[in-house]
Length: 345
Image (cartoon, rainbow, N blue to C red; front, side, top):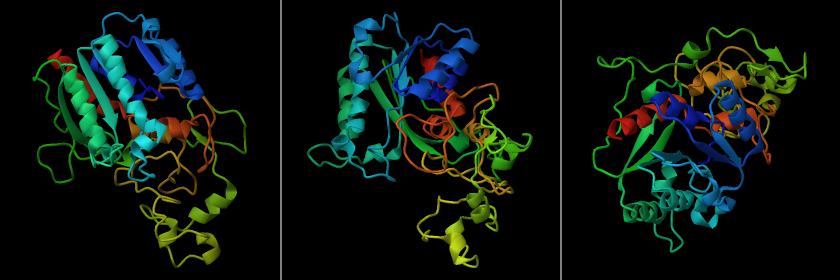
């Protein structure tokens, strides 16, 4: 459910499951899913539709061991307006209940932002949305467990904390233990860094040299003015904090603009990749490319994205490649949780 670009799908596949069907409404995400399915010779069905309009009787997918997905997070994100169920996207969370009731999977895995824990229900009760969701799963006979997991703890070069909820028909499930830790941890390998995961990529093709998006999505779309504005910003810093730079270079940015014109640090994991802003390369005066985003997110190099590569900010009806990645679940994190579910099943 809510398959997006298929990051969660990929992790579940790597854990040892087969995927019967994907449900996704975004045009370009569906193109990405179909291309991935074709390249891997799988028989997965893709339903390109508003999930609320999907009649479950048409799925015809047989017995299902695992129902999984991450519904849109904007209604619950702490960085957004926090409208919760007053935003129709917030109501999509409860499509999991409709599907679970009809399909009766042996287990369910849901990913969401941490804001879901405090989201108000329609009576104004803090945490009411999550509480209701858990109770409805329990009423269907599931044992529900949840935990905040950070992608950086599972081999992803990115600090990204998300809630994972797992509902199963017994009490045997337990969440995976971290595979990576802070520098100095004697028992775990050190967190992966931005420099580590993007270091061996060739120079990207540039938008101003060709209009054709390369298959590997290693494509530099940085406008000349943004190249100028990021110049002089040190690694790990953002433009608005560089008060020694000319005022016309900082422009209308304020001290609160910590994600705008942010240059990542080679020696650290990335900040959470987001759809609204594109981070800059650690040493070059340009945006990171979608392929570099994919490396940071934990996608393999043979994974192909479809659709346009749009600029740094703005809104669009369909998701460009940056948004497809940043909206997705990092595959290594999805794999780690799915492997523990498979053990129980």
